[in-house]
Image (cartoon, rainbow, N blue to C red; front, side, top):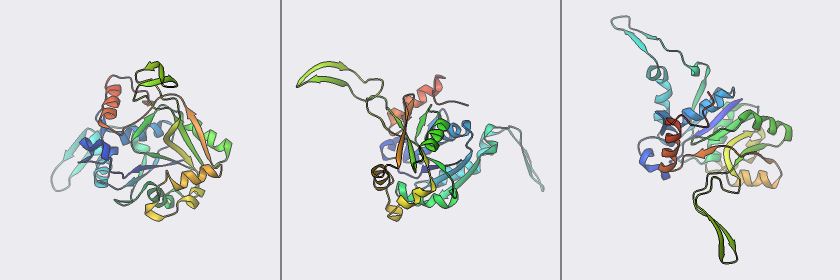
Length: 258
């Protein structure tokens, strides 16, 4: 299946990093978080990517244009008939990457709408360029196919950010500092969509996917949740970037399935 990844947002909550590059290019272990996300999908057998560019999209273009140059051992033959020989093979050789300019100010639904002509009339995968998980992506696809809805979202429980209180009226009966997970499910951003999603993307570039389209799908019973109780982490803040970096460098990154 083709994989559409949103890569055009401003990433204002990660300003320390995104002043000079788009958030999907912020590194974890020396590789952009976007690369980690693409490796997740590739490990599940999905290697045809459509990247929706916007803010500082030229950084992403340059990364993939020079991918072999930057990741391989190289021999240069200079002179009148110059040659470049790449000596290093890598697991990304079967990837297809479409770099799609979707506009600086375009909202999430507008970016998705612009990607649909490159998807064609087929079920496809959709996510954001700032989160990783150890979820079984193909299990999410099977769930989607079994339930026959237009959209399926992987529902996750994020790590706890604040102290959790158990209360009886105004009396706190228990306190747990930063629980392992929150109690409620949220959207993990890893989705399976049908081409009919086009009917829900009204409003042109101003369409916000998380508002009108998802709200309408939910009202019509066309939005399913494939629950995942394992690891999931977005990278909205510098603290979260450092958490992911620590997991990677320690060799304990749960999302590394390759």
